[in-house]
Image (cartoon, rainbow, N blue to C red; front, side, top):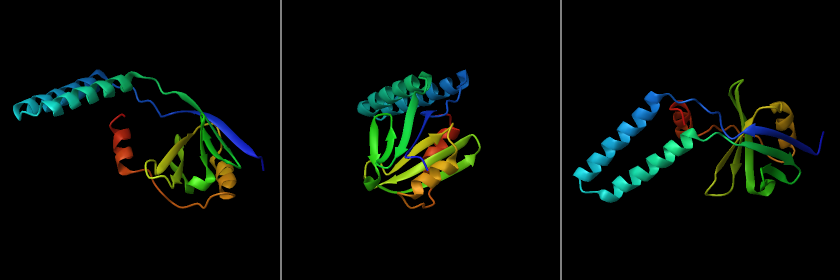
Amino acid sequence: MENKISWKALEYKRKEKTADWYWAVILISLSIIIISFLTKNALFAVLVIISTSILLFISVTAPRLIHISINQKGVTVDKELYPFVTLDSFWVESKNEDNIKILLKSKKILMPLISLPLEEQHHLDIREFLLQYLPEVEMHEPISQTIMERLGF
C-alpha cells in the first residue's frame, strides 16, 4: 500500500440557481426586514441585510479546487493538516455515485465533522488506507447540511 493518497476535488457541488431562487431569497429577506422594523428591531434588520448580501455573494462564487491528501501523519486539505491524533473515526458516505464523501469525526469542539468530497480517487483504496489509523464508525452528515443542499446552497 502507498504511503500517501492524494486527489483534487471541488469544495462543493455547484448548483445553478435560477432567477426565481434569487427573487425568493430577496423577497423573504425583505419580508423579514419589514417585520423587524415594525417590531422596532433595527439591529436584526441590519443582520438580515448583511447575511443576505453574503448569501447572494457566495451563491455567485465558483467553488475552489482543493487538494486533499492522506498520509501517515493525517489528512491534509490544501495547507490545513488534521493529524490522526485529533480525529476519532471516519466513514465513507455514499448517497449516490456522484456524491461520495469521507466524513471524519474530529475531537475538536468547533469542527466536529469534516466532510471531504471524493471525485477522482476510488473510495475503497482510501477506506483501506484510513483503516490503518482510524476506526470506521457509521455516521452521516447533519440533517441541516442535507436540507441546505436540497435548497441549493
